[in-house]
Image (tube, rainbow over all chains, first blue to last red; front, side):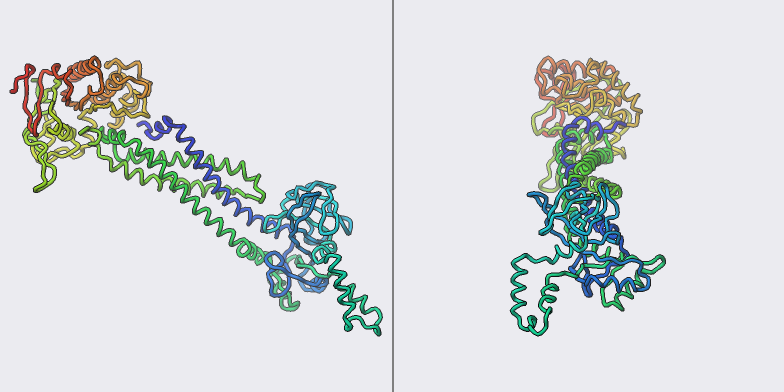
Length: 397
Length: 235
């Protein structure tokens, strides 16, 4: 038996292909939306992996440093190093800001770290790690910076000495790594007018400016202009140490908040990007409904255009299931063309998205099954119409 | 007469019930022998289409008897359980417009019926090509229906009707869209095919050009049939 659906598709292939391309672009958008969500989760995981930490120690009663702001004194790490099970501990700061390059600026997360300690970029694709104490930077390639570029962070210029890859914030902003001291200054540095006003205010305060206590005013002014805070301490635990136990001990004895990797992943994925995930989920549902409506409408219209032929087919003895099969196969064919176009389109345009889009094979397989199911469902309306066609309509009168 | 191709006795068809009931066919009697082509003529609303639908097993008559070949197919209800198979294997249809399937080529339009009947594709296409050759459209076998002239399309439709070698063909105004020359050519072909394949053919028509070509004509008026011989005499 010949394939009626196949012949019909070949006969009107241009209509099929054009419709399939239209549907495919819609499917491509759907797959890309799924890829955007996967990319956000992957970015969050990359952030955790790249930090090299087993435990994040942050300010008490906060969920910092990524989901909430957190501030710790920069000598806390010494006390943490004395805790049983702690192998290494290092200060780190995070500040999302506009980093200038010439007349343009790039949104980036500026990370302050101590060279050779947790928080350092894990690997470089070009250049070297930071070796000087100040004014050197390592940037993620997504910033668009090149080696030896001079970038401006607050009032200081930094030379890009190294380039790294896949170092992004949970929001997908590329990272720029600078020395911790510079980062601390950048995070809390006041402008010159504010410093002068603050000095005048302190000098005018008789409680702080006591003629009988020489050196007090200078000490107070120095402390006002220095910053000894960091956002978090990254802790690496000793081999065989239990991260939950170590974190629990830090919480108990140091009165700080400590999150294990699993807890931090939960915060990032379930809290930080949860709203975005729901937003994308809504888009996926709407796109699925729109795709179903388009397929249903196209197949329905095509079937209405063949009512007389269907009546003739039924009159000459074609089984209902043959006619239903023809319509179903056409809908599935449309879905197949659409999916192939959509998958290709998503693969082609994904790298051009500003944020990471991760197209997982599993999502593609699930997408294919959903597209086929939608097409099968969408064809039922047309099949109902076709099966209701009275073969008598082929005979006049 | 060489035996019955199709024989109809006292066929009636009533639409609706009670006060709104309409008797579309009141008393239809008709006999068409194998190899014979008869005309069925009547004004609009006389019951031609209803009769054709009853003969084509598309609607169920209210009463009467229909015999196809030696088998009674209707008598107080259908005697054949699978009407779809009856239409496919034992009744051929030719319509006013050819109604060829536009996405199948000429050969497959004809071969579709044997394929639906379960014949292998090769055998069905061989049969189709033989019929197309017999109807002088063999050279258009690979063409699409839209590439054929009206006359060629109607010949392909006749080939399709003959594809399963049915004992009867019902032709519903098959010459309506054709000019005189092509209309007469179609009737000539139907006569030739009736003889060649021993098929009984009933041609419903209004077409004055072809009426004189029938040896026997049935008139239908107000749901009743009257037979006329070839010289215009009601029998």
